[in-house]
Length: 374
Image 1 (cartoon, rainbow, N blue to C red):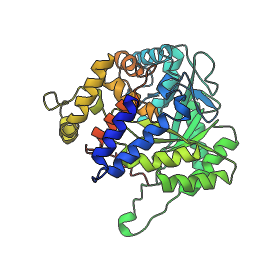
Image 2 (image 1 turned 90 degrees about the horizontal axis):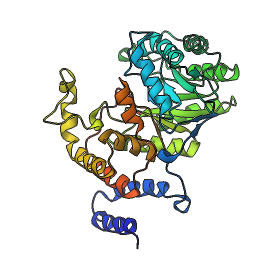
Image 3 (image 1 turned 90 degrees about the vertical axis):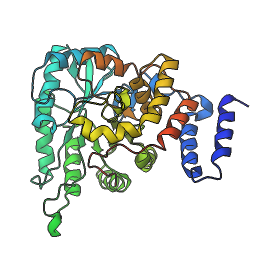
């Protein structure tokens, strides 16, 4: 009997007759997936590249929400992109909603400065597969608005074709909902997304913040048009995954790659916040309940990090990759970028994954940011 099998047997015996039995079984199923194919499956963090539709990208990427949203040129951003490329990262996510388009322009200019090229063939050295997103705001009432926004994003990114174009969130902003009136336009946006793909404006299309029900509806609508959803970007971390389990399951069944934003739960899982070292004001007010509740999980993260000579952030990000998702943490500077990208090239053991999830299952979930996965 292996150590892993012994650990599972003991854990199951302790929990089999408790209220945690169902939760444990879910954890074991996840571990079983990691050990699939007779244990021969290469853990995602050890893969050089993973597939997102037609794109061949690094097992983790870079999010741009932490980069300046009020600048179109920034030396630090160029340095972050250089470090990313040196570390094997070739996937960067942005959005038209970040800085009202300035983030897309900043990404283009930073790539130029770092001698990198945005393109759909990310197998080529120095090529970055950029993903951006359409903002479904109330005044966009026609499918053509998606196409027009895609053209504008492509112009800001300096490309003829966007490698991955996503809808940023379901049509949730309903100004007249309080008066009993809603005008959901998701189907119109899906039509526009399909047109972006068919016209060649987008090499691949995806969605963001979609739960199982909305995702299945989108998949049905787009598949009838011969268009495949290749990705779903969601809030996913050790502090936000129990509410995402059904979404992860549906994505896996449909062959849709999960992109994980907030893999460090807005810095909570970087190991720098605690009761003794809280974040600065005003972040300390909104984060206090989270870092106090997360302390038991952080204790385990710190121990594993110490045993493996890794940082707490690297362990937390590695866990996301072990779930089959592509984490896209942000990085304000080169030091943070290099540390985050050290999450690749090694893999947590099944025992470590299970231990982290068992502790996390007793911790309150991090904020959903206003997006319930439905």
